[in-house]
Length: 271
Ligand SMILES: C[S@@+](CC[C@H](N)C(=O)[O-])C[C@H]1O[C@@H](n2cnc3c(N)ncnc32)[C@H](O)[C@@H]1O
Image 1: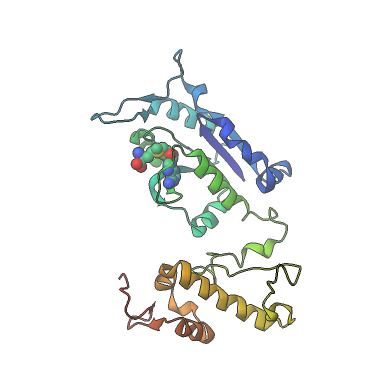
Image 2: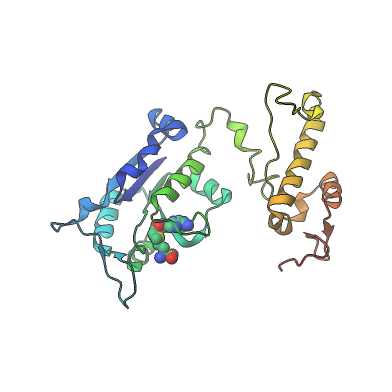
């Protein structure tokens, strides 16, 4: 997979040389290219921003350097290669595990992390006519720039690529993993020693009984999701719940609603 990042702070992307992503680059599984947006400016001060039309505080990133940078990066690909443009912005669609999976299947992603109040809207309108442009938010808060969101997204995407994680199965049981975990959080995990500072581990985990361990893990996932993200249970497709899932949900205070979804009596459920 090829990844390009265009930024005014190339040094902010240094962590892409470290750990899992760094190793994937070294092995040639990821071709990461970081570009300095200011290389496509032509004035003495390498200006990338200007005041907003309509007035107001803050500055807006100018369209010209972004246009030249994107043209150059896109032209550097093979004739028929078409990148997906990933635009970090708090006003984008939420970055989810499902979106990470979708993006991990694309051969080429170009990230455009901005600063100031963001990029002049016409840039995305222009490239949106020819390319798949995804405006993506990593959460309901505002950061000073899009570089940290790029690090977040690249790590989430890269670990899904074949051969990047040591054990290809290990993301299958993750929180949010498409399939049986799509609307669940992973439960607690333990390793040796069997007792630490007076805390033991659940007996079932050393029972050697794979079926019971799997059931225990799934029950714990329901407990944790109920405690930390009940909205996930409310929105989950009830067809994904088996008989035992329904038993643990009932024990945790959930009831099947007339539309088949699950809610907790006494609590308003968003329709
Ligand atoms: C200060 S923010 C601009 C915020 C913008 N005025 C707004 O309210 O939506 C500057 C840049 O940081 C990045 N950024 C900030 N928060 C983000 C988030 N939650 N998700 C993705 N990118 C974000 C984007 O690249 C954004 O253009």
